[in-house]
Image 1 (cartoon, rainbow, N blue to C red):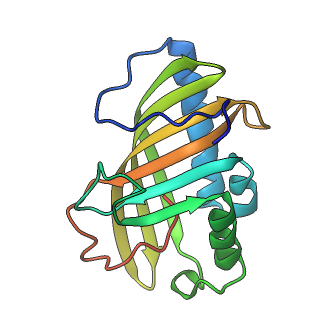
Image 2: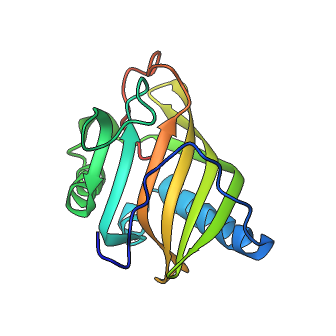
Length: 178
């Protein structure tokens, strides 16, 4: 991480209430983020991330795990995230070929300015995924470190999606982006 994009230690402490205008800005950004994912505009979605980003999905048994020491379903830097997106777009990610239809809902957005043009945000996420005659639901808690800038008003320095479920059953796998 660059000095500008410092990554705080993720703790379960709540994000303090920020000004309503900031919360609305973050809500708008997250709605755009969801739109890009649901419309399978993954190249545009990838552009929301900084070059030194991290995209994290911890295992369900260690939601507060440390990505340096614990198993994560996804622990991507920008290179690995771009490879994941390319595989999904080009049909080489077999679990998403053809790709799922998804519908995301974002709620309970909290945002707090932490200085240096950075915002710590949290939200609840619910993803409905339809594929092969099945409908799966993925509830998650999002924690984001955002930097002001980019075409969408913010860039994602770190995105952590903690699944709000004890295990991946009955889904069996995580092949979509949270």
